Length: 74
Image (cartoon, rainbow, N blue to C red):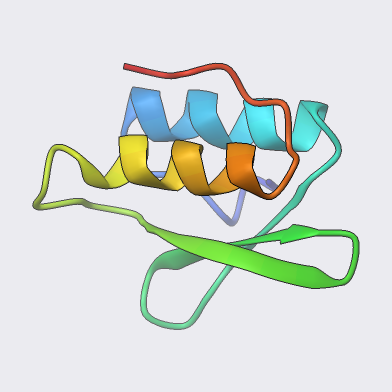
């Protein structure tokens, strides 16, 4: 996550750092959604500004099912 690619909230920045620390790759898409990859495999997207309080928790669960060891960010 470079300086040009700033995440919106503190919780999202923490999640993106945890993904990268666990070996995943994050990329900012054209519509403000973060694309999450493990190796070359696309896993999920995370919105930069969520309207649903469960969306980040759902993304964490998708990452866990994909095999990425990311602790739950509440």
